[in-house]
Image (cartoon, rainbow, N blue to C red):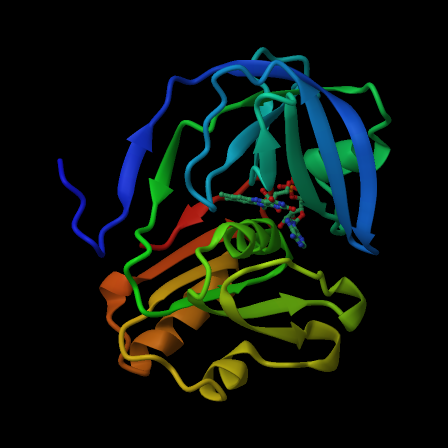
Length: 245
Ligand SMILES: Cc1cc2nc3c(=O)[nH]c(=O)nc-3n(C[C@H](O)[C@H](O)[C@H](O)COP(=O)(O)OP(=O)(O)OC[C@H]3O[C@@H](n4cnc5c(N)ncnc54)[C@H](O)[C@@H]3O)c2cc1C
């Protein structure tokens, strides 16, 4: 089916489980740990900047179903057998964060997916990306792969200025950091923007926060069809992925 120029293209992939090994470990900021994994990536595909893989951990109670957590393929190179994941280190740390904190070069990690990709067309005049730490891998990937000159505004919520990341982009990017520790407010940051008429808006972060951001953008008259919001985690609940659309 032909893709109209404002609708995302959905692509499905065969689901495969892979065993990878930690090849590199870099602390990007005090609370963002990058692990580069190496191993069998034959046929690995990820077309959308906000795709996810499932990280699989043994059930601590000995059951057969693994414990699963979602992470963004931040970068990958199938020919070099490399997949990069960025872990936002948070407290309380669940199984994914605990594993990443302790991971040593050579340690194994099992992953599954991506099961599919959602590819947003490049036809929008403006892209507004709003997220917290868990969304930074997707936002960074989007900025690094965006076509030259594309208008992208980013509102990134992090704890302090020490968590800022430097992204290389050819986009016409306006990147604004919002600091939780300074009681910065995402809604005020939105109000400070000159909102384009009909942007594509992508929101990801804590579910209630993402919901509030989306409601505020609705109130400001943005077309709900152009807003994609996801809860990447939920305060007080382990392993939560909430689609808000
Ligand atoms: C599509 C998708 C892509 C994602 N991509 C990434 C990614 O690339 N990098 C990344 O770091 N995260 C990403 N996340 C979020 C990540 O899956 C969650 O933060 C996950 O809960 C972490 O698992 P855990 O085992 O460490 O903690 P869990 O066992 O899930 O949770 C333990 C406790 O920690 C809390 N918690 C979970 N996350 C956070 C947080 N960020 N800050 C504070 N408290 C938290 C929970 O509410 C719970 O109380 C993504 C989520 C989705 C849905």
